[in-house]
Picture (tube, rainbow, N blue to C red):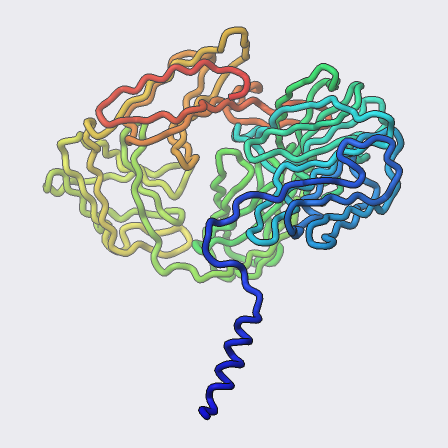
Length: 530
């Protein structure tokens, strides 16, 4: 008898005895269905502490503590578990309030066992009174700064008669927004209520951290009127100024981020003795972030500085680089879309340009060049060059052509300044007006953005009128319109105390396609909901 045969039989029988998922056939895409509940969905006069939801197939729970939403919120979170494969049991750990309708939004937390299909949107309702409240409030939450929908944001309702508010008390009702920013607060009682939206950083259903975002309506609403509301989510400017972040860049600029728009800021050395150290600040458009460039990096590592502004000391910081400074500075070129002139951008502030190490050729003819420094941005060198489409302009920066303030020079760099052929560019005309029945106050900021959100052009307008831009690279763009309420030429956030809404931002729903050699005309009637 072959001795290998019994061993083979054992392996075969062992394999046959293993339980495996069925192979073949169509993939299960149907979510689990609720077939019954105890008590029944929509029950009244509920006094128990246990809810059983029975599904038509075996289920599992996924991040149930995070995904289960009970509105109104419970004093203590319930325990949730799967029993007998098909049953989800909710064990209440605190008594429910009298004469109150509760909604258990549990759908996304329940999945079928085989494929993980969620029972999305499933809700269970029960009342401790003799009727189920049936009123509702719907709407959307939008990011005030971008005009885009805000997903997974808390939406909160507070009874107007309550003494607490979103800063001090839990809400009477709450839900979360969907991916498109929409929300529905269902099974509400009658009466005036305050509506808020909140990005809750610490999960306590309260607006109590400086980095939380808030939205509110100016007046209370009543669910009996079946309102549909839009909330604009914003982060208020900090009540006090402080430094929210600091790091030394590889090029040795010191990047400081401020909690709010900053005025004049200076750096005072605490450890330095002798020598002259000068800092030059390069601010972002919002003036809440600056890169401070030093005139000298010798012995700078590890030195402490007081950062002060407007008569007060904001912080004491230590200059400490973490990366190695590149041996060469880099130089790139960019064309001003308004003037058509080319600029050189250095990675470090420029001390000197030695034209003896620069070769400029116009249509192959070597030409004298006089660089122009920029008094407001010491990393910019104006070339004064605005070549016509038929011209060929090139420049070679040989080593030591550009010298940085804190040391370092460029490696050989070759640049071309050829003007684009007008036939390869497009024009855009935007005719703005208010939709019928809408009235908006100016002035306005009209912005043209790429499909990735980068700002390309911007126009300041006193009223909704005609705007046009030339020499645009073909492609898809979006249009954003800001109601510049305070006339400061930028978007301004809101305030919760005192109450002030953020400046409105409108988005054109459809992209604008710019085509080479064409003038594209777009008519935009600005209205609510855009």
